[in-house]
Each structure stands twice: as structure tokens, then as C-alpha cells.
Amino acid sequence: MPLNVPGILVPLQLLVKPRIIVPALCVKDIRHLDFHALKRAGYRGAIFDKDNCLTLPGKDTLVPEIEAAWKECRQVFGADHILVVSNSAGTSLDAGGIQGESVRHHLGVPVLFHTSMKPAYSCVKQIQSFFRSIHVKDHELIVVGDRLFTDIVLAARIREESWKERFGSRPVASLSMNTTQTSDISLPLQNTLGIWTTGVWVKEATFMRFCERKVLEAVKKWVITPAKARANGKEKASIPGSEVDTEQSPQRALMEDSKSSEADEEEAFKRAFVRQIPSPPPPQKKSILRNIIGFVQNVQFRRGT
Ligand SMILES: [Mg+2]
Image (tube, rainbow, N blue to C red):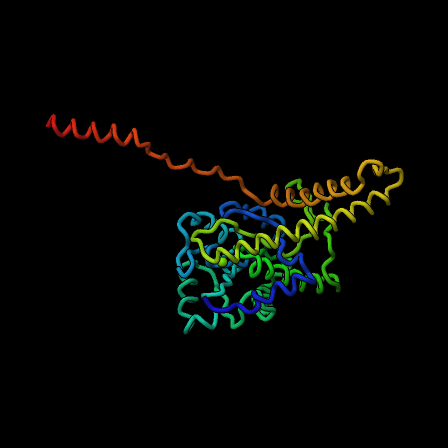
């Protein structure tokens, strides 16, 4: 596995901008995404990771289980509005771009050929150039991938560029609700959406995934929740006549409020864009007793004949 220097440097940036690894949405795989709802909400372009998101690691063909979802995605967005950005196919390690061409052929969408690994800023620039050439803006993009330090950070960096262009400043810490309306659900202001696929088709980089999860948990616990608590506290203080129960553990009250607010945003995205799919029944385990009975019946049958 090649060394992904931009990915390795992400923890350093986390010290300054810990929110960059927080996905807007978590789904098991792309079957759970409602592409029609995303399109209705204003998303017009999609960036997909390849390994362990669309294909098995190192393979060029689509995972059979997600064929229908992929077909729907291509129909909804249009194949020319989808871009596969991989840290294997299409990189400088892909000699002659052969794997990139193979992936493009099998998946039926363009593959980005890039010299810097995700989530390098030069890779971000290339992605922006691709979508701007077809008149898709940064805030109209979704980024789908299975790794926080590469795919979700990539989404954050595109989002940052988008904010600078739209508002001339860095992203605000907390997006206000009730700014975008879709299907009777209020959502935060539309911006590049980082979608984390948590299902892994083949186990790989287990230790790094474990670390990513732990860092995400820590960021949510120590950064996002307290920040939202402070924001909620200020909101309450600014409302005339509002009373905060300061007699009985005010900090606890603020933390509970913040958790519910964060959950509101996550829930809004889930309700808007996640499709509930019934999980398949678990495979029936043959009991030892049933095996013995089957064996005896088989022997009796043979003796009979
Ligand atoms: Mg991947």
C-alpha cells in the first residue's frame, strides 16, 4: 500500500479544525441513499470513492449487491455528473492509467486522473475544475466514501472552498437549521455533503479505521457537543422570558440541549436522504442434532434402496 502523505498529515490539521472529519451522514452502503431526494434538495454532482465503497479493494468491477443503487444514481445525477476519485485507480501508481480506464469502463462514469492522493488540496482543485467545467457548484456536490481521513476530509476541504466563494469567509462553526426546505424537512444550509459508508466489503486497514472511529468519537464528545451547548446557552439567554434551570446542574441541562440539537441535524439528514432497507434474515445455522438426523435418514434411505 503506498504512503498517503496528505492523509497522514490530516491529524495535524485536526488540531486546528477538528470538524473536518465529521460526516454529515452515515450509511452502511449506497443502497441506503435516496438519490432522488438528494437531487430534489439541490445536489447535482457526486464524487465516489472506489475501494470498499463501490468495488472490492483492488478490483475494477462493481460489487453486485449495489448494482441497482448504482444504476439509479447514474440515472438521477447523469453519468457525466459523477466522478470516481480513488487513491489507487487513476493515481500516479496506476501505470499508464490502465486501471483507471478499466474502472471507467466497468462503472460507466469518469475517473479522475490525479498525481496527489486524496485529500490533497491539489486533488481538491482538480475535482473543482472538473465540476465547474460542467457548471456544477461546490455546494451542489456530495462526496461518498468509506474513510474519514480521506473521503470526509476531502468533502470538508471542498466545502471550505465553497464557503469562501459564497460568503467570503471560513465556514461557520454551526450551521443554522430551517434554511433549506425539502420534502417538508428543514435542513441546514446546502453545502458539500460528506457521506460516510460504514459497511466494509472486505476487511482492510482495520487499525486505521479503528483510529478514525475513535478520533471521530472524541471530536463529537469534546468539540461539537460543548460548542453546541454554548450556542444553545447563548440562544436561551437571548430569548426574553426564557428561564434556564440553573439551580439543578445547569451544565448538565446545556449538554442535554446540545445533544438534542446535534441529533436534530443528523436526524434531519437521515429523514431526508436515507432509505430504510430491511436487513436480510440471518443465515440459518444447522444444528448438530439436525445434521445427525439428516445423516441417519440418508443411511436408512440407502439401505432401503
Ligand atoms: Mg475506500
